[in-house]
Length: 271
Image (cartoon, rainbow, N blue to C red; front, side, top):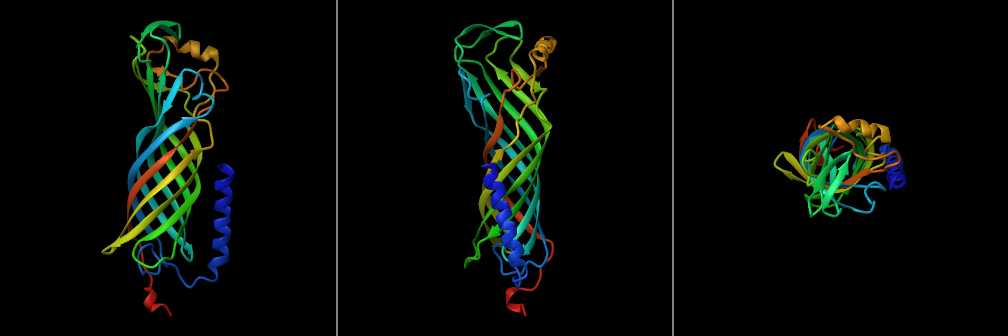
C-alpha cells in the first residue's frame, strides 16, 4: 500500500507537469468558474479506525474498530487542468477497541491481582492527532453540476494525546489511563474519492478516504520500564514488550464547504 500510494502520487504529479503548459485554464469543482486563483474549505466528519500488526493479532485479543472525530480546513491550488494540490490541517481521532478473552477469575497485571469480568476485560484506545495531509486531487471533467474526484498523497500527524479507557480489569485497573509510550508523530498514506456540487455561490463536497499508517503507533518498552509502572495508577503502556507492532488504519468520511478566495474569468469569457 505504501509503495502504491507513493508511486501513484508521483505519476499524477508527472501528468500535471506535462499538462500545465497545455492547459488553457482549470475549473473550480462543480462550477463554470476558471480557477485562476485558489480557494479555501472547511470540513467535518469522522474516522472509523483500528490498528493492525502482530501486537493486535496475538491470541486472546479481539480487536474492533472505533469511531472518532475529524475536523479541519484545507487550501486548494490549481496547477494544471482539473488537477489540484490540496494541503490540509485537521484534528483527527484514531485508535481501536479490544477485548481480552481471558477466563474469568484473578489476573495479575503489573504485579497486582485483580478480578477479571466473565466477559473479558476491554480497552478503548483513543489517539488524538493534528494531521497534515498533502494531497493531489483530480476532478473528472464531466457534464453536469456534480463533479467526482479522486485524491491521494502522504500525511504527517503529530500526536496530541493517547488514552486508554479500561474496564473489566477489576479494582485499581479500571478507568482512564495516559498511554506514556505513544509515538509523537505518525506518517501515513491517504487515498480517497469525493464529489462536489454548487449551491449558489458556494461549493459543497463529500468524500470518503482510506488512511493507512506506515509507522508504529508505540515506542518500544522494556520489561524493566513496565515494572516501574507498578506504582503509577494513572499511566499505562500501549504495548507490553519490545518488538510489539501496531499501526493505525481506517476509513474517513467528511462533508465540506468551499469558499473561493478569488475567481478568474468564466469559461464563456476565456479568450
